[in-house]
Each structure stands twice: as C-alpha cells, then as structure tokens.
Image (cartoon, rainbow, N blue to C red; front, side, top):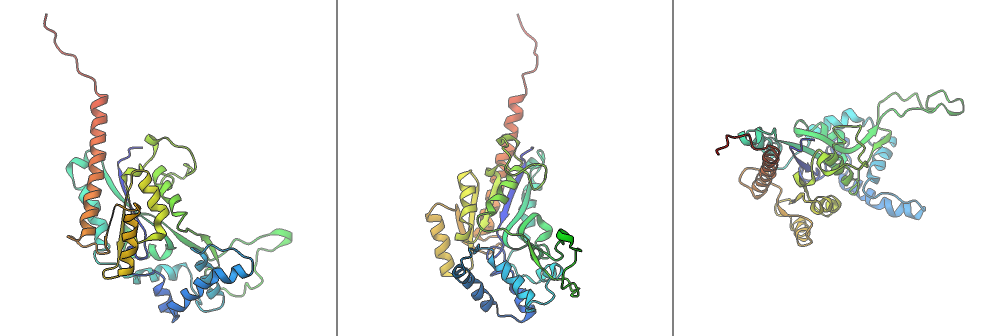
Length: 318
C-alpha cells in the first residue's frame, strides 16, 4: 500500500446537518417527528417487559418498517429515500468544505510528487440511501449507513413456491433491514478504511495485516462528529494516533457542554461551532490538520527514498 491517503471520516446527523436526516420523511407523510422519536425512545422498555432485548441505536429502523406495514409511510422505498436526500439542509460551508480540503492537498506541487490525496468517508447510524441522494455524496469515497431490502429473497423450504401469501400487493416498499450500523460498529468501518477492506473486498477486516501493508494508517485519519454517541470511534482514533474533532450547533449550550466534556475527558483534540465556512475555527482546524498529515506523509516518503539510495561511485585520489 502506498499509504498516501488522508482520510476524513464524518458522522452525519448533527455533524453535517442540523438535526436528524429523517426529517424530510416525516414532512412528506405528515407525521409528527417528535411523536415518532417519542415512540422509538419508549420501545426499549416496552420490549423489555416482554423479555426481548433490543439495540437502542437501531430499533428505530424496525419502527420505520412497522409504520410502512401500517400504511403510515405508505410507498416508502429506497428510491423515495434517495429522492428525499436532496431535501437535506446542511450547515453553512457544506459541501464546499469537502472540495476545499481535497484541493488544498492535491493542488500542492510538493504533495503531488507522491500523489497524496484526501478521501472523504461518511459513517452514520442514519439511512445510507438518503446520504447517497444528498449534495455531499459526489465528494464521498464510501458511505456506511443503514440500508433496507425491498424484495426479500423467498424461501423454497417444504415445497414453498417462492411467493408471499400477500403477493397481491405489488407496490415497492422497504420490508427488511439489509444492514445496520450502531455507535459501536462504527469502529468496524474505521478498521475497514484502515486495512483497505472497503477498496479490496478480498481483504477481511478481521485479518491480521502488518502496519506497513495497511492502506490508511490511523495517524492519517481525522474523525469529525457531534457528541458522546461517537465515543467508541473517538477512542479508536485517539488511541492509535488519529485526530478527532467535535462540533456543536451555534448557541446550543447543552451541546456545548457535551463536547466540552469530551475534550476534558481526552476524547477529542478540539471542538468548535458547526460552521464550515472559510475563516471559522472549524475550517481552520480542519485545513491545518489535513495539511499537517499530508506533510507528514511527504516527509516520511522522502526519508524512505533517502535511506534506500546508496552513495554513487566516486573517483578516488591516492
């Protein structure tokens, strides 16, 4: 591996967008967003009473499917989710910051000598299809998010004919969870970036790979998120030499206290308001650290070349 990549890993909700990405879904179907999340927040206790343990990070996915089945989100499918992604409202400076960070490295003549590049990744417990439909998707190398299946593969066990008993309903809707990511499994995505599993499927993320053979060393990564739910990801980066940054909405004192506690606990390197326009603290910190990492890559590769080149023969004087 060339190890010439600066990887910027973004959370999504409350990091790039002010609030939750599912807001356009509620607006489309005339559903109270507050009431939906109130129901979701109560599910863990209700299922516990039935002796059922649920994942609090991803139980909302099941509730979406329940609402589809009840006709509350009638016709909700992956195509609709991608279309609704176009309605997402991002913080000021997004998506421009994505291109500016890439250009700051790739337009540097020194960094071009070693083909040093910036790659953006999104790792979110939100809906991947909505992210893919948003304006940031074109700048992103890979997206990890939750995904749905519209047409489950039928079973042929015991003479089954591969059809559902309710096959009369031909409207495409989401029916099953295809992939779910929670706050802890975000760390798996980080290791996939580290080892190159996302680029090379033949590399298993659990395989043992030596440091020099990993595609993106941890020290060449920056993780940006909004709060305590990202502590597992922050911890992986911090303990392995990566860099971490937290954002909070301007004027939100509760969010400020949370990220301030993160820096007191040593979880993050820096925090600032979620404003990515040129001249803000967030913009300057990201720009400075991306270029520091690129410089480190350049210096390391230059040193490797110097060490590998022997002295040329020379004329000897008696």
